[in-house]
Length: 107
Image (cartoon, rainbow, N blue to C red):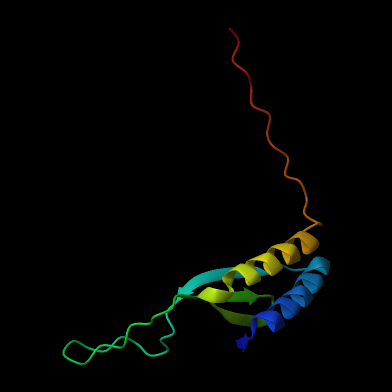
């Protein structure tokens, strides 16, 4: 998995959406991230230091390509605006679902 900066992640995500338009899909995950890369220590050992800032780990996966980025708390608004505009531009080929007609009760 490739860890990218926020702007590079959005540009690579655009490429993933373009490839998935022909065939395939893109899976996105958002997860709270505390910055720890080591497991929690055993009881009796000194604990890991607490993080001062909350972060968000964003992952995108296509068939063969995986990308990820870490968004800091101060950058979340800028990333959210850019991500929403990216989604609006790339999710135009969705098919409408046909809703089953519900039978009305005869009175």
